[in-house]
Structures are given as structure tokens and as C-alpha cells.
Image 1 (tube, helix red, strand yellow):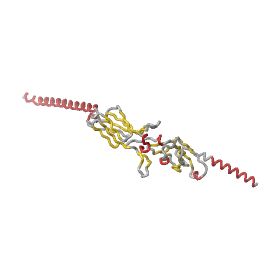
Image 2 (tube, helix red, strand yellow):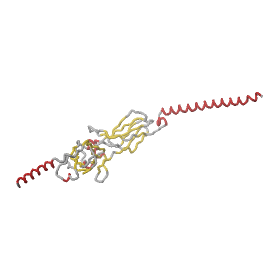
Image 3 (cartoon, one colour):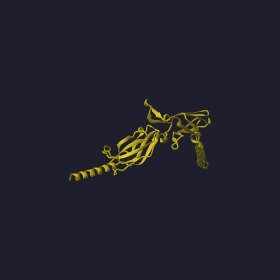
Image 4 (tube, one colour):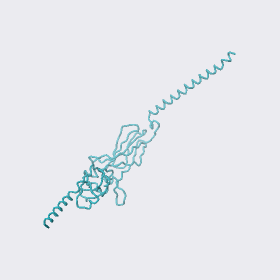
Length: 282
């Protein structure tokens, strides 16, 4: 009898162990997992919103240790920036679906795996900040600042994208005559541009970062468009069409005034003639 009971206990223990090893198949796993990264600030996003369970994110690198982020969260996004400090390493994210007590057990919870992500080759370059620009004679000079990253130096100052990409980073300037659509471009590895322009024309321009060595995501976000204002007159500001409209309106107003003046003059003469008629009769 004891031997039979012992066999049942062993069988039950083996069954429970198998169930634990299989995890919890009833919990849904994450879908539509995406990496969103600008200037190395990286957010992991996924679906669906959990109900009755939680998510925990694990970041797996090729050589670095596994890091856990956003433990037992009910959100569907997670800032994983500080887990990707080795920006040239390739990572995958495991998004675990767990119950509140599931993390204390030895069983492996169900999870979904993201696409591979390498920050150095996949983060998007943010907008450069234009600090100053001048147009003097036939030269347009522009000074701008590199976008900053969330990563810092030992002294606490933020690293720029130039500090990370170094000689891989270039900037492209696109410029054109104001009121024109024909663009020219120039390239620099520094933080300034000097290009030749027509001294009597105003110019508009914008800048964007470029990583020529990339196969994808080569071009970064465009800076705001700015325009010079050297010798800007009403035609430059509003265009010839507006000037023509104003001239037509002015001519119409003058014509109307002349016509009204002639009509009023005729009415006055007619009135004066009527007033004289009784006197002539007498």
C-alpha cells in the first residue's frame, strides 16, 4: 500500500514538474514589437494591453549580460536606453508575460522575442539645431549644433552624436533662392557651412545629418527651414501676384471715385438748373 502511494506521489510530482517547465500557456504573449530610437534614446513598444497579468522586459546582448527592465509593468512600452550602452552591440528583447507571483517560480514564463536591434546602425539622427546664420555679400554662413544623446561622460555632460559616430558623421545643407524651388546642396564634417550665393537674393535652407556608411537610415531628421532677409522688399515678402492684386484694387477704387464724382457733379448742375426755372418764368 505504501509502495503504491509512493508511486502516485512520484507520478504527481513528475506531472507538476512538466507543467512548470512548460510555463503558463494561458497567458498571451506580446505582438507587434517595435524599436523606436532617436539619438540613441530607445523605446521598445508592443501590444496588447495586459489584463490579469504583467510584462517584464529582458534585453539580451551578444556579449553583455541580460538586463531586466520595466519589471511587472502594465504598460506596453519600455525605455531601454541605459541597457544599450554598448551601441555597436546587437540586441534582442524578450517580453515576458507573467503573473505577480510568476517571477518567484523557477518555471519559464511565456515570452515573445523582438527583431534584432543595433543602435549604432539603426538609431535615427535627430534634428540639428541651427545656432546662427548670416548672409554677407556673396557668402552664406551657417553655424549649427550636434544633437545630444542620453549618454553622459564621467563628468556628467551629455555626449553628442558626433562623440559616438565621430568620422562616420556628415551633415548636408540644402539651400535655394527664396520663392524658388531649385535646390543646391553642400556637405561638411564640421559644424558650419560657407557657401557662395547671389548677393542680391535671399535664400532659404535646412540641414540634416548623414551616416554614409549605413545601408539604411542614412539620412536623419531635417532641421527647421530658415530664410535670410537681405534687402527684402515687398515683392520678396509677398510676391508679384500680391502687388498686381493691390494695383488692380487701387485702380478700381480710383475709377469708382472718378465715376462717383462725375455723377455728383451732374446731379448738382441739374439741381441748379431746376432751381432757376421758376425765376425765368416770372
